[in-house]
Length: 235
Image (tube, rainbow, N blue to C red):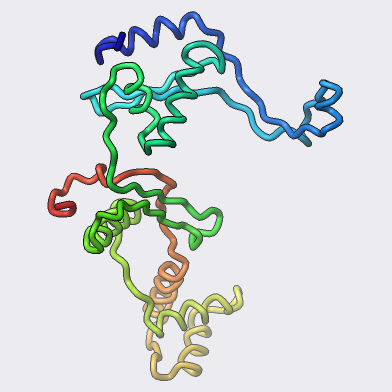
């Protein structure tokens, strides 16, 4: 029989106490080691270690909880089933688990997004959008605008020819040169964009470099259009 939403925590706590949670490891194994059945584990073939984690959502609370589970037993099977359903139907893992146990219909976001942080080079940061074809181009543009504003904190500004030249000029300058000498070199090679003060020149160089490299503090994150609560965005 299905569980009520208020029974989930107690049900999980009861089963979790009976299981034996062990970490898993991933290693590279040669055909010879598979045939012999003996694998020597060391720094050269160890790939990763970790624990199996089961996600479940609390209906009506907007909260997803996580517990460590064994790879075997009821909770281990439930983790596998919820992850399989989440891939097949594009549900979250937590909502898939709750659907199996309670029958609560999982919400499906019309679009999802992922911010992948570029490390160590910030210009490699990318925003990936997964869009429902029923969304209009305006809705897609609004979604991207919201994602950019939330995770990057400033409006997009195109680079002018002057700022592109400033960024390139500064990047090729020697480390020991003074701002005065650098400004004089710039004025000589770019008379139409000449500077009279070192402070203004250094400020514009720094701004041009930041804008060109896209230096931001955005962290890698996953989300969906349901994260935004501005009704005028998704009419």
